[in-house]
Image 1: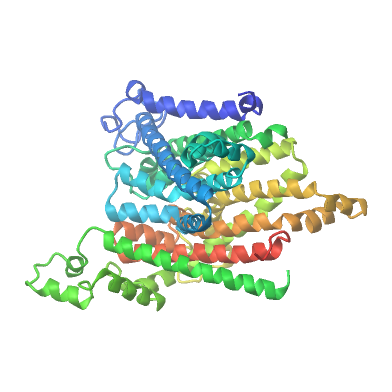
Image 2: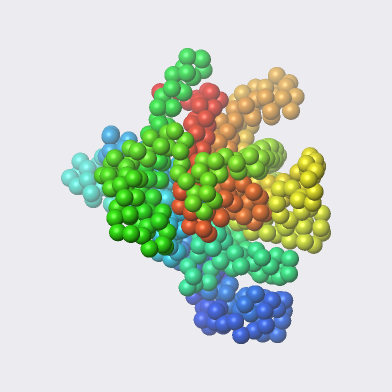
Length: 271
Length: 324
């Protein structure tokens, strides 16, 4: 914990991430209906009742920001969780078994890493129709190889560690060795990767929204930027606030990854 | 590394790249097959077709063949550079893509060059004064650069430099005022903002990697030895440390080269740049599947090739990597 707060990045990261989390959770209490177009269109910021102004349809920007936080957090966290689970399973299998299983799984991982995530996600959503679940599934399916690679190398190096051999000699089954002896030592880097994966997923979802492929039933920050593109000359606030929200959220998770890495990595601790 | 070794290594890597390219083509084929909608019906359109006509079309286009045969046919077509036909544009997909390759290459190569030069320079500066205020500033800026969505950065650059200050044009790749071919300076003015927006993310990444690699290289024995021999600071940094830090830097640039192409889809849309990214955007709004998949194939193959070249360069640059 002391390492987490030592450099100043930890508290900054926690503040940013918590702020977005609260925005997402408390949206119904601190914001109005994001689809309500009752106000005048294109009101500038600091207008009465509309702190951040309104968009071209007279919808409150602040309310849209608050509900957009829900989409970003949901996509980020669920995507990263699925990606991590797949990565853990594949990496553990490859690293623990070694041999041809290892080789095959790692080639498959390399192949998935070669596919351009953003273009593939765009096309998949364009072909099969927009929807949050589809976005989540596509991004998750393309984001596990990095985790798998890290987990694999840790498993491969720990497989024959003295304490693991000791457990095995003591009569522990392979499955129990993996779960109780190796897995706990792999979790720290996986948590770091998870934080960075959330950041990447939020950026990808924003890009899809900007391309007009967001979920039509939900307000997302990317979709807001799509609408803002035509109004750059007349209503800067339509573009400025959602983009700032994305940048700060992604920065928060990237910083969190850095701070956790610093706090959890035994090598960084000595330095 | 000796030349025959490099040749052997290159050969092996090329062999490994072949299944990757095949795999990409197979993914493309599966997407075509999995996409909702009957392709024969799409070809015919909404007109009422006589019974048997749809069957005829299916037969003519080989859509009634087993999936494996269709896949082989598709691979054969792709190998010959036939990427299908765009009905929305009434042109072959390959022609459409080739026409727009120039502007996209101009944009992406400019952005990647700028990101590499400035990223390496900032990384070196940061590494030489690790722990200083300059170092902290570079690290904060690079983390921020890595977090800002590039298309939003593009929108903000338009807002500031085109709308508010009026210094640079907001959209397009050249003015349409007259028939005069645009001069060098005018072209540059259109290129500047999109290239800047596209480069920031990679600049940040390259600066981070360069810093880490240079900190390690600068503390190595051979750098100390060179300093003791009285080599100038410039020589120590550039000829000794950077030479030895080159492998990871080249790797990060190379593995991202293909993804710059993907990122340019968003940037081209923001800036109305007439390249492949904008083509992707319009093909998505027109539901023009052959064009979308042609672009996916192009970007994926570019990533595979960029990785291949990177691997070979890495092999040549890093004295520690063995041929095995």
